[in-house]
Structure formats: structure tokens, C-alpha cells
Length: 90
Image 1 (cartoon, rainbow, N blue to C red):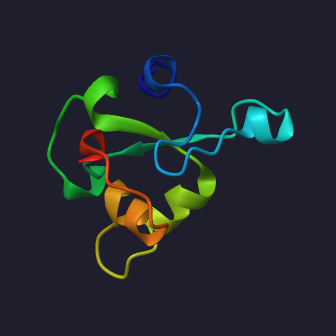
Image 2: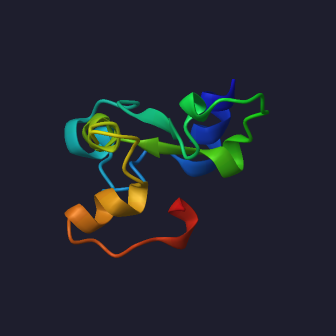
Image 3: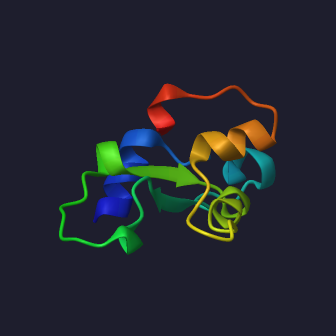
């Protein structure tokens, strides 16, 4: 439910790199949803799809979770690609 709402609100293009599987390959929906505040941080909470989730392509999602300790932020991944930071990704 939260995934669907996130994609309805924010679209299916990666908010980090802009990849859109439908535009590139003609295959819609090759997108994942990333929690800006990792679930592994613990504690009970209600996920707000508008504030807590972003659509990301599989490659960017894999990079986010490739850090030795913790995760990279979406803006850290954007910097790796020499893209400007986006305030909505913090």
C-alpha cells in the first residue's frame, strides 16, 4: 500500500538519477521504493509515503545499501554521479 502510494505521488522515475524504465526500454515499473530513514534503525513508526519513501532504480538502491556501515543518503549517491543535491532527498 505504501509503495503504491509513493509511486502515485512521486512517479516511477528514479529520484536519484532520473532513470525511467518505460522511457528507456518501453517496460514500465522497473522501480524500487527506498525508505529515507532505514527500517533497521528500529522503533515503531508509521510510514508516510509522501515524506518517508522515494522511488529509486535498482542500481541506485543497490549503491545506497552498499556502504560498509549504514547506508549512503540519496544525495551522497547523487554526488557520486556529479549531480547536484536535492533538498527533498534528505
